[in-house]
Image (cartoon, rainbow, N blue to C red; front, top):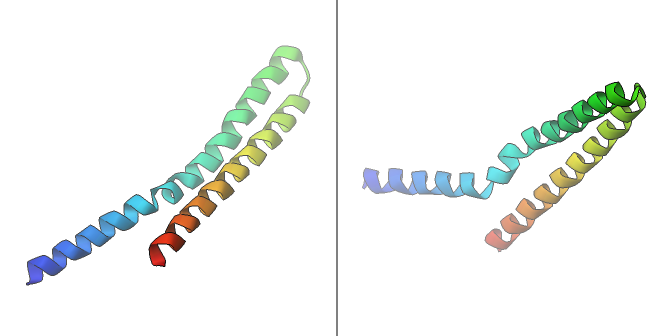
Length: 86
């Protein structure tokens, strides 16, 4: 009986991790988007001698895109959770 209960708990844990895996990586995606665009802007500023304008511009674009992606991911997970809980 105890083995069956432990197996059910493990199955529930695995299911929760699968359902929420997008949220577990969202923070890293948010930071990576900003950093990638920042370094591209920094490199372009050095190449075209436009310091700091391209760094600032591309950092803002990266931040905006990352936040947009984060919100879409959160809404998607929320919709899936709502469907499951109905």
